[in-house]
Amino acid sequence: MAIIIISVICIETEVILNHSISYNREKYVGDMLNCWYNNLFKRDHKKIDERFELNPNNYYLISFPKSGNTWVRFLLANALFDENHTIDFAKLGQYVPDLGRGRDKSIIRDPNSAFNRASRKFVKTHSIYSPAFRKVIYIVRDGRDALTSYYYWINARVENPVSLSDVIRANVPPPIPRGLWSDHVLGWIQGKCDKKLVVKYEDLLEDTEQELEKIFRFSGLKVERERMIISVIRSSFKNLRKIEEVKGIFDGKIPAIEKVPFTRKGVVGGWKELFSEAEHKLFWKFHGEAMKIMKYEE
Image 1 (tube, rainbow, N blue to C red):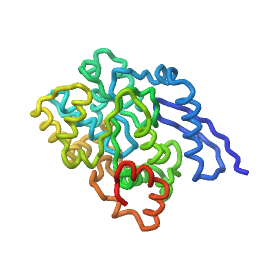
Image 2: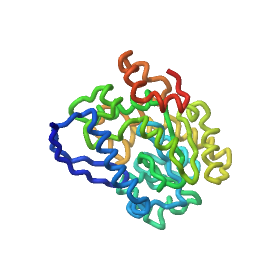
Image 3: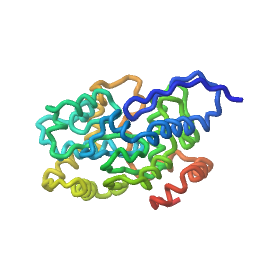
Image 4: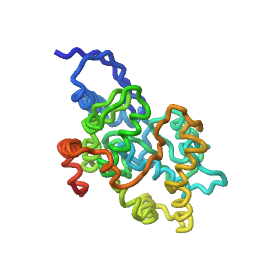
């Protein structure tokens, strides 16, 4: 019989799990996130509105981690804010805040922030599905590429290496877990929202300007084509990688422990360099339904 002693603390839309634990690791993350979902999201949507201060007029950029959310934030910030200075990772939250970062929440509350001066407000989160988010732009990426990028991101930040099989199963140590990629995708694709736009990462790569225009149309914004072109150039992978190399990410510093850059490759099909045949079969076992619904080929 597994013995579990757990305290679950919800901060913003993140989950931190402090634990002294002996458990079946493959089930643990899913069980805990299901518990969190059932006891918070399903219980009272009004309370989640109050707790996270969700504004029904905001547009929420939502995705599973490493699916292009930060890239879209840069695209929006560079298109909507005509700034003389370079918008870097540390400044990004001033324009498109992250609901999971305490410092960014202070920006959301500040009536004089650049965010609150915008005619349309966009907020990022990796939250699982809840109808409390009224207007949603859901960004989805081929699960194999998303988990490949996530695998490298996790292993650059943990002491004990995590296997790709563990990442596929969402069997990773707290406080990193987000649950299964497919559960996240299916929750948002099938869940009801007042307004919802689904943007595929691969389409963004193929025609960034066109997909950005779709986002603006969806949110009722008219942005000059020249502004969009400038934003696409400023937000290119090459430029974001350069910004990260010079200024670091989020806190403006370049951490010595970062073995893998945040903007790693950003390509389509990169999973082929990592997945073994057995891991590919395992992936389809866990995530096949979501892949088929999103029309990703095996």
